Amino acid sequence: MALDIDIRDLKRVSVITIKGRVDSSNAPELASAFQSLTDRGRYRLVADLGGLEYISSAGLRILVSTLKTCRRYNRGDLRLSNIPPRIAEILDLAGMTPLFKIFDDTVGAVGSF
Amino acid sequence: MPDECHLTVPSRLDQLTTISEFVAQASQQARLDERTTFHIQMAVDEACTNVIQHAYQGTEGGEIILTCRWTEDTFIVTVQDHGRPFDPSAIPPPDLSTDLEQRREGGLGLYFMRRLMDEVRFEFDAEKGNTVTMIKHITPSSQNEHP
Image (tube, rainbow over the protein chains, first blue to last red):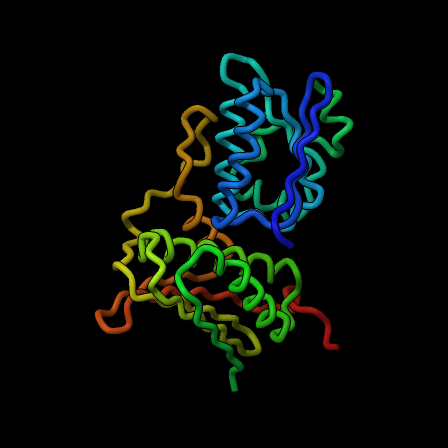
């Protein structure tokens, strides 16, 4: 499945739902989606990864750089929800699990802000 | 007798999905389970991304030649290209222990290849170009039941 990104602005938080496959060919598309949020001053973000089938190191780099952007000046955070077990294993292998606040579901992640 | 299959694709990032599907098919023929297949797909995806971005430096005229070969107890993928020689020792390992602000955003591709496969070898030959050989040992737990 190709990459499918959906952005929903709630009152205080934006939810970005990422489905399908993120590799080096479409990672710039994911970067632009995050940037479209931070450019609008939306720094409290939840990434719902429930439909994410694959993410390469190129995609992981974007999650980390967006996390840095959001947390700068204490203005927000990028929180992850609904992570499929296979993706969780890769985040863990990359030593990224301790960097993120991770939630079982998106409602919980949104409510945590 | 080992089984094997081949794929040759142009050195373009839009070929990564085709490459991934090719690996999945070979892995399925070798009766590897989904988790093992995912690990091999990821290692090959990172290897091919390196070839396209570093060996061929983003130029699209090159070729990537993939071979999957498997026996009862081993699954071997080779990725061959005719780009610039690749020196893996020039890539520093990622520092996974540093905090967020210190963390370098790179070096993860090679790290994944080494962690997800049991053996990874890099060779350069003036005629054959670069060859990356990645080996996964097949254990009963990494295979599906007989159909």
